[in-house]
Image 1 (cartoon, rainbow, N blue to C red):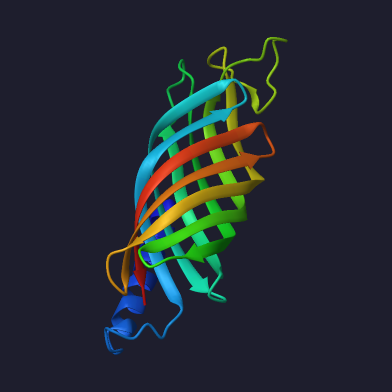
Image 2 (cartoon, rainbow, N blue to C red; image 1 turned 90 degrees about the vertical axis):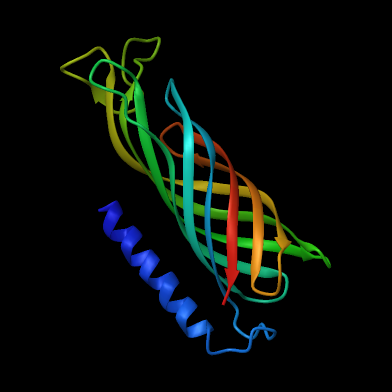
Length: 194
């Protein structure tokens, strides 16, 4: 399912880019933008933590000069472990509102939003001997998890202007979801304004 979504998102980004080529380069008349990025994420489900490379794709729209709305997908952690080892993978779909302060060199912004986090894998059994999240695995002494959860997204970042259409985005993001899931991620992104 993730591969179909990524193909769809890539197609949307390329179509938007093709339509944007009809506009003069020095006029930023459209308010849509796309973001693609890579980073490092450290997350935790129940008593199990995982870290590794994270990536993201997003499409955004400028509501006003100070406010943006963004719809995105990100792979937070990809470490499912094995039948006898702990580990998990997590992906998220999110919608965020971004507030920004614009300067001559770039934009300082903050992010507030909601995310649907889907995670699966193996977690440790709690100190009480039961599974706080998921169910006890029949193969090992770990908890098997395959759940989704809604959570809050908070972020802070800076968009550095390369030119009128291209920006380099640096961001730290925190996600806190229902089922004892949290993650912190640092991203370096490329932002293209259509």
